[in-house]
Amino acid sequence: MDLRNIIRDVPDFPKPGILFKDITPVMLDVQAFRAAVAGMKNLLAGVDFDDFCAIESRGFIFGAPLGLEMDKSLVLMRKAGKLPAATLKVSYDLEYGQATLEVHADSIAPGDRVIIVDDLLATGGTAAAAARLVNEAGGIVAGFLFLVELEFLAGRAKLAGLGPVFSLVNYS
Image 1 (cartoon, helix red, strand yellow):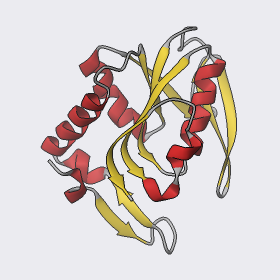
Image 2 (spheres, helix red, strand yellow; image 1 turned 60 degrees about the vertical axis):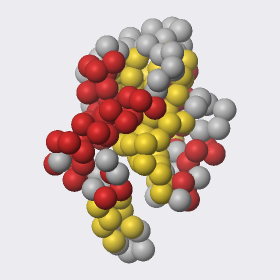
Image 3 (cartoon, helix red, strand yellow; image 1 turned 90 degrees about the horizontal axis):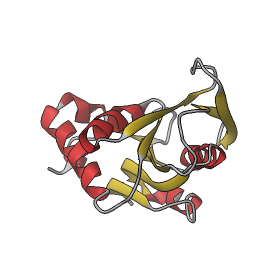
């Protein structure tokens, strides 16, 4: 199934001049959602890892079924102030300001090999921050997994040297 036929283009969102790739139609179509999860799982064939680490919020959409399907635990990375127990956190720059990402301090065991999963790779800033958190917790980034990659924004280059990058649908 070609998910490009299901992912919707939304012009001028969230601001004029941006062509937004809307993945919500993928979840509305059960067969497309199933194909997305299966395709992402297939990208990881032969990759040795222990856990999925999903980035809020759309990374949860893919990390949860992948974790169940592949018998791997799911670590949640959330925006600041959303996790109830002791956390590790990292702040990072966005093109329009700063953001902070947190993870429970006890959710990644030292030496755990982690796949960081999110819906979309754009500039790579959030995924790079997630990798910093994994490393701070003593884990090892075994790779990054995305449903969509916007190649023209060069996010893959920002992740160079941090772990292999896997993406199912690429836009150049």
